[in-house]
Length: 165
Image (cartoon, rainbow, N blue to C red; front, side):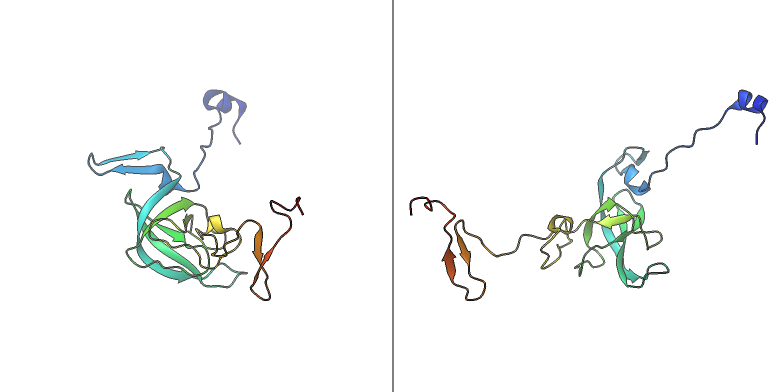
């Protein structure tokens, strides 16, 4: 513990904030061969170097899908592939965002589903925007809904013209 005199002379040093996704804060200009730090990006593009599975930390048990990705700034990071099933291979171009996976050590990034070469999750009904899933093919026409059991369309009385009857 420092003395009062030492604190008067030197003072306490402020601890700088450490970023949780450092690879997103580095840009590389290949034409000028310049590396810039501090200008952070929300996402970065990269190419898959390796696609594999990884087992999580102690209380959990699974085979989590991950990919080693070489970003446009030259840094190689490990990223998690969210959702059930994926179409990523070795040279797939992917979009990365920040966000760690708590039970996978060293995984600080997520791959954005439905962007670039990454397909969306098939047959996903809820939380579709997070997994790049399109809306299902069930077309709902205003005023007409299909009967679940027989498949025949039934006209509802709540649409336009219901007041006239």
